[in-house]
Length: 249
Image (cartoon, rainbow, N blue to C red; front, side, top):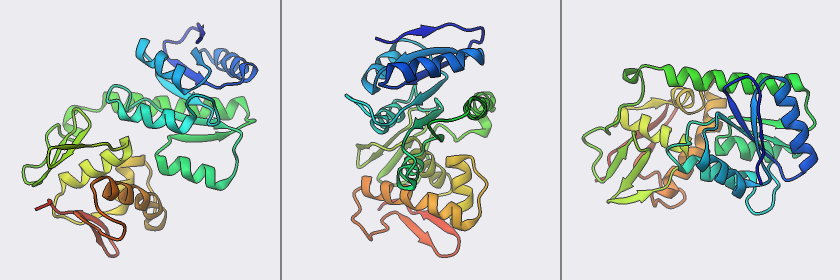
């Protein structure tokens, strides 16, 4: 069962790890930094915690029974109530392919065990600060709640983080949704890839780095919209610039 560790701050971190000693040690480290901590032994238990109380940040291992970290991330990002919770992988996996896969999923940060307390708390503070900034952003500066009026067979509701094609729901990750919604704001226009990654990842990158992050998101969106490999569908490549959304006919 999950345990709650009380500290002075009102910010609560959910620590998910199947090794009791590691889970306890991480919780103690975070308590020393004045965070409230709730723990869970795997992804299934973590979902139970999320349904029962407010969580400000999720810190999770990857390799766990019942539901691993990748599966937990996908479940969290499917729920509109949890979609904005910062999510950090804390793992013993240091292979570049593992880290790259986590980044392609849209993980907010990726820390490899063992780590210094200063590195852990710095990552947490940064993600929590960014989450607070987003909460304080005036509604007028956010993506509007209604989709553009001329998206044809495609329909987007940003308030609910939901997408439909031909009235059939399309299941997108949080970053896939933000990318598609941003393209919808500029339907018919070529949107620079750097602008898309600023929207999805809050990163200011050059064209090469931004393109490397955008391509797997675009491929996944196209696949989920029903397009086959190699078919651009309604999201066109604009050579040397980025991408353009064309309303499906």
